[in-house]
Image (tube, rainbow, N blue to C red; front, side, top):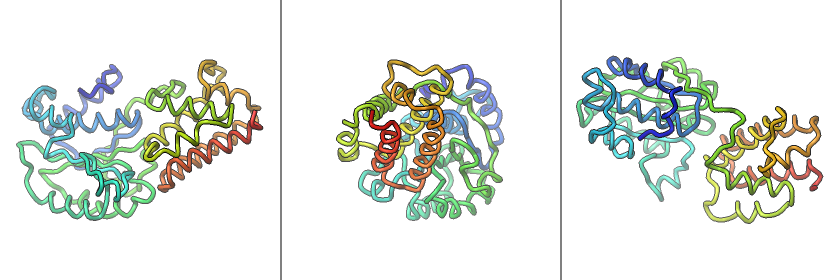
Length: 295
C-alpha cells in the first residue's frame, strides 16, 4: 500500500502528517516528489484523517476497511479531482478521479454541506489546478476559505509556483523529497526509447503516437521530463550509452542543448494549455530531429 512512499526519505513527512491529523489544516499543499508520490501522500493523509487508529492518535493501520478503500480510491469520504482530465473523457469514461468540470464542482459544493459518512473528515484531493483550469480554481476559493470541521483539501503540484498565489496563500505547504534528476523514469521507458530512436532514424514515433488514445497528457509530460533528464545527464557527462535518447542528444553540439532545454519548457507549457499531447510530442521530436540534421 502506497508503495511509492517506501523510501526512508518519506518517514519524517509521515510523522508530521500523524501530528497534523489531530488538528488538520483546512488546505494542505503537497509539492515536489513524483506525481505518483504526491498522489500516494495525499491518500496517506486521507488515511490519517479517517483511519480509526489514526483518529485515536496513532498511525494509520493500513489494514482496516477505511485504509483499504482509500488505497483503492473507493472511499466515500475521499474524493479526487484532476484538471487535466477533459470534460468529454470524464463523461464518457467516469472513474474514481473526476474532471474539474463546473458540473462536478457544483456537485462537490453540495457534498461539502453534508457530514462525512464516517467518523473522520472528508478529504478532497485536487490536482492539475493550472492553465485552463484557473477558472475552476477560482470557483473553489470560497469553499477553501470557509472553515469546516468536516472537510479538508489537498492540492497537488510539482511546484507551488504553478498554482494561483491565492491558492498557495491559503495552504500549509509541504515539500516531498525531490527525485534524482538524473535517474531514468520507469513509466515512459517505452515511449522514451521510441522518441530516442526517432531522433536517430526519423522513424517509428508517429506510427505509435497516432494510435487512438495512445498518449495522454500525463504520459506526454513524463516523456518531456525524460528528455529534460537525458539533457541533464548529457550536460553532466553521465549519459547512458544504452539509452537511445541519451545517445541521440549526446551527438548535439553543446551550444545547441540550450535550444533543447527551451523547447522542452515550451512543450510542457503547451501541455498545460491542453494542446493535444501527441501533437506536442511530435512537434518536439521534429525540432530535435532537425537540430541533429537528421543524422
